[in-house]
Image 1 (cartoon, rainbow, N blue to C red):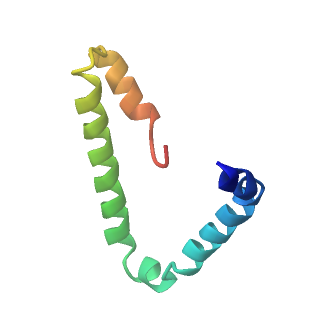
Image 2: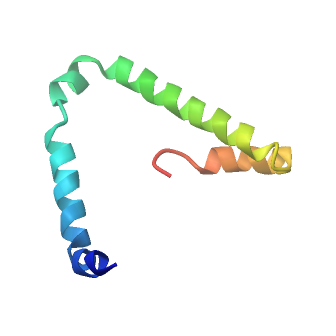
Image 3: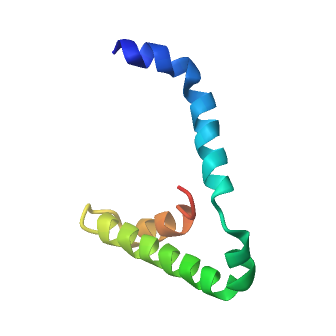
Length: 78
């Protein structure tokens, strides 16, 4: 637990370094060369996420209307 107390103040800095590193590894040439493929992959992943949310919500007793609302509200990045 002592290591948590030491690293907690550095958390924001370390997260910043992580996201800078991820951002620097993006190949923007691929984004420009294949925009349709990237958009289709994004749409596919979102569709999978919606189906998975639905499949988890329904057996838990969530009404269909509420499950549909959850699937629409929890979009990318949540």
